[in-house]
Length: 338
Image (cartoon, rainbow, N blue to C red):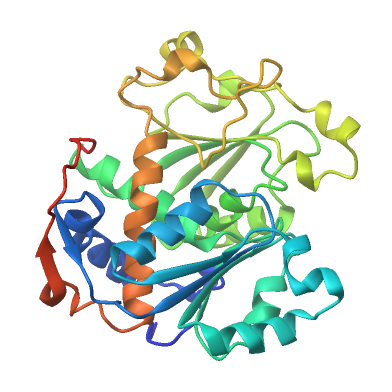
């Protein structure tokens, strides 16, 4: 994959060598993301952060990633605060914003909308999530986290055993991660979902067609034994036809420390793309897991900044110049990173 000037719209753009390039650059970003150094390699560059769905981690991490490379960020956070509310097309919005920006990150509720927007943009566009379709940067940071967690155990990703739990129908992070993982060898997928929320059939067929093992379960306990990773996702209630229908699924699968101890291997890593639904009637990850050292959800969020910094550096062709623009940090930084 030639990153320079390219859009990042789908995990289908990536092969293993492209992923490894992203991860190698992400590793190089560690001193900057961890506030040991600063770099001004993108000083003067502008990111337009266009988020037309609610977001905390993705929106802020995109902005922070760009800031940490020295760039500036401009944001729109909802449709009603943009000209789209006045009937402007995505095509016209893209033409306008790409005159103001050097790169654009965009989230939109409709599948395929970010690709439509990118087709009219004159600068690179990064897909920050398009409805139930894809979330490529989330999948990259998830795989980067899996790589790092397994590396600490002297393991590689080939031969991974992973349980994916929850709303697999609408969970775009799951869809994208499944595709990226399938580029590796001998992946064992255990898909744990209630009836009606299983992984789309075409995705399952694609995984099996690529030579991977896929087993489907409707009970949590049966699906999480003998795995390296348990990847839990919330019920995507905003994708359902009605709130009443979404409520039928909330809280069906709840992973807590007792279930983990009884059914998981001692080193099974717990992941979640966040936000986790912490309301009493949901609790897909119980609060009693917070002290579990195998809970990787906050390592995931830290890794999101590294991966997005890497993507910005690659598409704007400064990956090899970052260290040449480095300076010492001059302010107090808490020891927040292990």
